[in-house]
Length: 302
Image 1 (cartoon, rainbow, N blue to C red):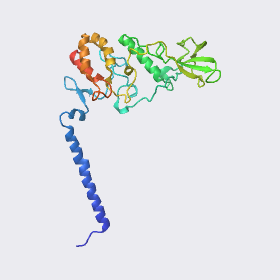
Image 2 (cartoon, rainbow, N blue to C red; image 1 turned 120 degrees about the vertical axis):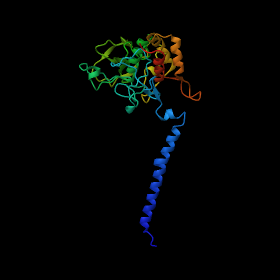
Image 3 (cartoon, helix red, strand yellow; image 1 turned 90 degrees about the vertical axis):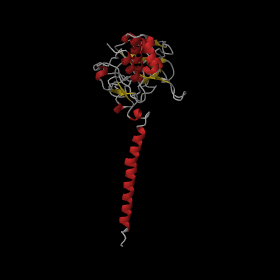
Image 4 (spheres, helix red, strand yellow; image 1 turned 135 degrees about the horizontal axis):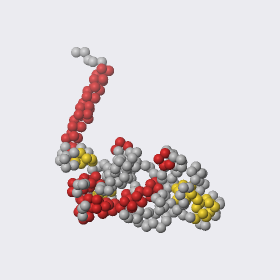
């Protein structure tokens, strides 16, 4: 019997290897993983950790946060509010398709002021620094929850308290000029003078590159009443959790809006709170999506 040419035998062996590996890795392995994923206790995670309402409708996932706001982006007062999600979607709507961080760090403290004729919404080159965003959110939350929303390095108008200081010798010497970098000239500077020099408002288009950026701590409490997670987004922008401190801050409002006793609302918060992983890793956290679902079940909105 004639033997096949070597090149044909080599190709047939390669084809058999491809077919065998395709069956193993493309069929058997995925089916095995699917079977394991259906084991009780694992099936919910494999299917996306979905959450259901009382009628059995899917209302979200315990792994992805949601915004509890109205059509104008204002907080719906009858719900616990999540942390910001400005990087996940243009409107901060927890869109998993555009998950990501803003990449703004602690040194991002100077705003790119808008053209006065266009304003913040019209000037695409304008942007608020991370510090100003934090200040704005803190004051808004303080007003909503009836607490002091002030925090260090924020003006009482909710922008970053940052001066641009000019020195006679560049970085040293006498102070010759001071500008409040985040306050345009339709506002009075938050600080009248700095080291004996009158503080100026910031003029649109002016060059302050030679100024030394100088944040001013101010007299706000060192430990703000509004927690840090309430004013900053998570790395992914999708985190459904808030700190127990932020949840506790919202309990009086929720109780009043729902006509419930504060202790009963606090019990719901406790049920939605998870402790540290293995007892020592991470921090306790409250799942806002699960909490609001339980809130609707216990105290339906009228």
